[in-house]
Length: 127
Image 1: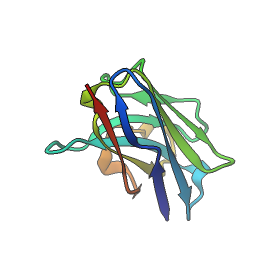
Image 2: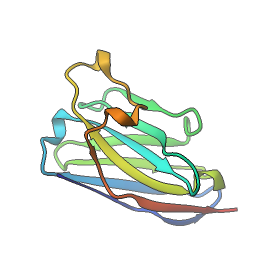
Image 3: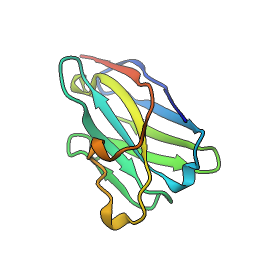
């Protein structure tokens, strides 16, 4: 199983970045996907998540209206479009996958529920 995040970098406040996560080694279309981030000296926090078919999404309050999660099941990728970036968005961003049988039990922000994790990509937002 591999989850490889890419697209991070240095951007000025107000700018945009698009992160991608390439999945392999498991049946991607069966998994719900999430993005989490961890800033230096802080705990990991939830950013966004998306259902198997992409119809349902969930966002942390801190990124609502600025970030958009999407997925391409044909390409086995999940993306995070980040607009209007702020210095407080600076963190290592990681993608994760969880296999659940019903959306009724989906806990998108609970990192303990995720089965697979990828290496992160660093996003730095300068003021």
